[in-house]
Length: 229
Image 1 (cartoon, rainbow, N blue to C red):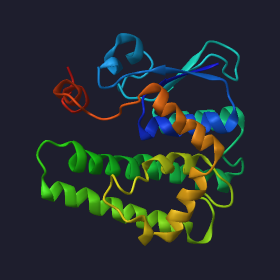
Image 2 (cartoon, one colour):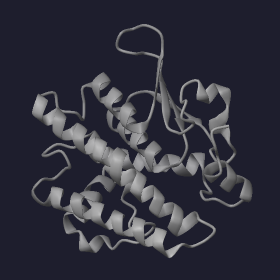
Image 3 (cartoon, rainbow, N blue to C red):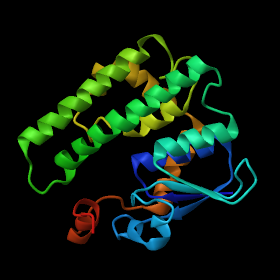
Image 4 (cartoon, rainbow, N blue to C red):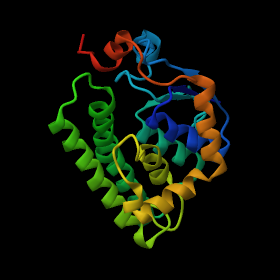
C-alpha cells in the first residue's frame, strides 16, 4: 500500500495519474495547504521541503521498512522503477524520458507556477511580472509543441512519466495562452485528457477539495508568506 500525501495541485495530479494508470493500491491522505497542514512535524518527517505531494511506500521492492519520497519528479521515477512501467528500460529511451521530466520540473512547472501567482493570486497586479511569466509560459508551450510535431508523446512513441509530469501544467486559460496556436500540443493534451486513468485522477479533486481557490488572508499567508522560521 502507498500513502499519498496530497492536495489538489498540478504536482499532485502527476502522481494520481500514475497510480490510476498502474492500479497500484494507494490511499489519499489530504494535506490542506491552505490551513498549514504541510508544516506539521509528521508531514515534515517525510517531506522536509513542506510541499506536496509525498508518498510512503509500505511495500518497497527490497521488502524492508517503508520508504518515503518527496518531490513529484522523484516520486514518478521511483514508481516507474517499482512497476517497470512508463519509463523505457534501454539507455536512450530512459534518457529521453528523464530529460523531459527534468525539463518540466525545472522549467514548465516553476514558470507556469509564477504565471499563476502573478496573474491570479498576487494582490498587486504588476505588469512586468505578468508579462515575464506569461511570455515564458508561451515559449515553453512552443518548445513542447515543436517536440510533439513528429511523435505522439513527449518521449517518443510511448506514453511515459514525462507526459504525466507535463500534462497537469498545461492550463491555457489560467496561464493566458491560446492553445489553438499550438496544434501539436493541443492534440497531445486532448489525447491524455481522454485516458480513463486521467479522468479518475481528476475525479479525486471534487472528493478532497470541492471548493478550490484562495479565499482568506490566512490561506494567502500560509501559501505565499513563509520564511525559513
